[in-house]
Amino acid sequence: MEFLNFVVILVTAFLVLRKPHKERLAFGLLVFSVLLMVFLFSVATRTGLLPGVNY
Image (cartoon, rainbow, N blue to C red; front, side, top):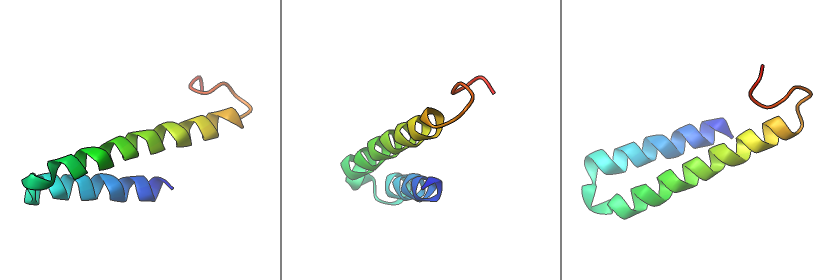
């Protein structure tokens, strides 16, 4: 899943640099990437034995 997130960020950067007229799509992909990161973080810390950030 993290690889998928990196690919989405790479596609977003490509769209912004090469096709600036598709900025709205790039922003949507960036929002999707942030939500995916939050989801993955919450899943990883919910099932952990230690508290979320205090490793």
